[in-house]
Image (cartoon, rainbow, N blue to C red; front, side):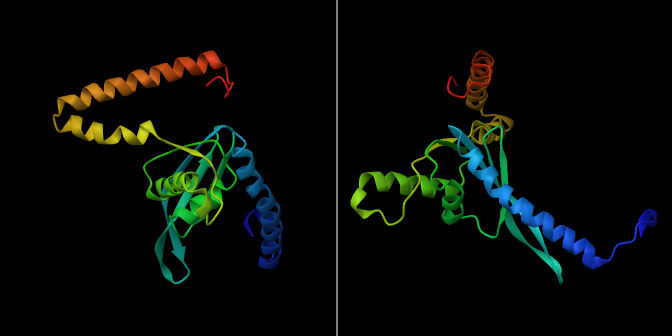
Length: 178
């Protein structure tokens, strides 16, 4: 009853339920729009799911983005089935960290191409690329530990970032040119 507004719990629940129905339709549409792009970024993060009785357990927040569209989903598991569902029918490039579920699905896709008679489930024909942001983390750690080669590798990665930045400017937002 803050600021004189009185509303029953049932009215609040009814409004939230209607909003939820609206958002469910658009939530899946965001995933489909993101997958229309030639490349997407896929990342998993830990998510603490609170339980009714107190306590909590760890779930996973997965983020799928094309740069223009962002799709997020909370899952109890972080496995190949989750990634397969998110990327179903996608035939572009997936940029991701070294997550085992993503790499496992990428290997399955590769095996399906080698042995077309043994396809058990249809697997999207995406290309898997590692993410430089994640790939360079061990080099920062090595550099802190005094390994001189790590500094050189970080410099090379920095040069790649510069090239990418210049290419983005020249492409002027055109994904095909990138």
